[in-house]
Amino acid sequence: MNRSILLTALLLVLIPASDQSSAHHAFAAEFDREQPFEVSGVVTKVEWMNPHARFYVDVENEAGVVENWNFELGSPNGLMRMGWRRNTLEPGTEVRVTGWRARNHPNVGNAGEVYLADGTRLFADSSANNRAANEPPAGI
Image 1 (cartoon, one colour):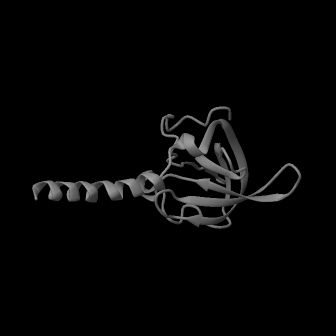
Image 2: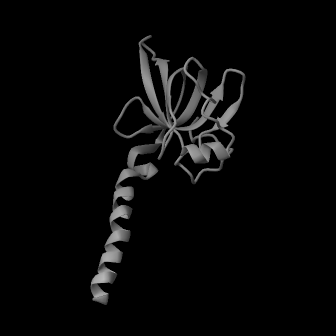
Image 3: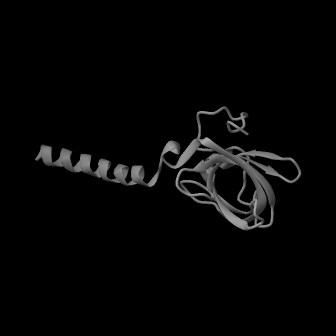
């Protein structure tokens, strides 16, 4: 009897943990530290949700074609501790973004810093967390 209770308790602990671990990713699994980027454009959409907030920016490429980029930020809670609010970025906001490209998607990146038109520098609470908070992405 005690063994079945222990086994049931263990399963109740492990099953939710396995679901969460598959939903979240390590930085290196999705992004490439050897592919830093810097782009400028206009915010088109902001998603303020866990596990990562995201925002989208229309960026004009070298050929003059507008591409919509998808940027991952930190968690909403982490961003709020850094001074962000839900309305820090809104559609229509002009931004410059630095960070690292996704390994398998050309217009997806992990944002390191976001610069507003007035020069305000916002740290993105990036999952590339082994870099100092005031150090720009390598290669920029």
